[in-house]
Image (cartoon, rainbow, N blue to C red; front, side):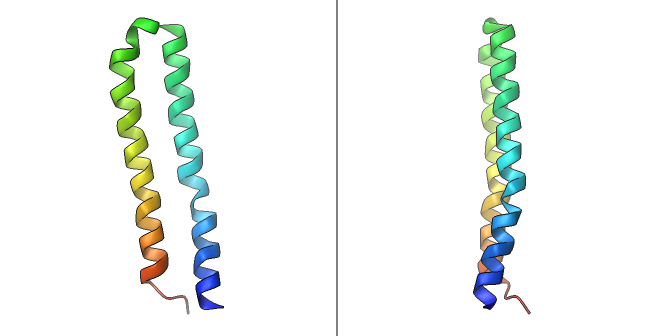
Length: 70
C-alpha cells in the first residue's frame, strides 16, 4: 500500500506541471498567432519554460520513489 500511495501522490502532483506546460504553449501559440515575425524570439523562451516545468515533474517522480510514505 505504501508504494501505491506514493504513486497516487505523484499522480496528483503532475497536475501542476501538466497545467504549466499547457499554459506555456498556449501563450506561445497566442503570441505567434498575433505576431508571426516574433516566432524566433518566442520559441526558445517557450522551450526553456517547458524544460524547467518538466524538470519539476522529473524531480517529483524521483522523490516519489526515493522517499517512502509513512
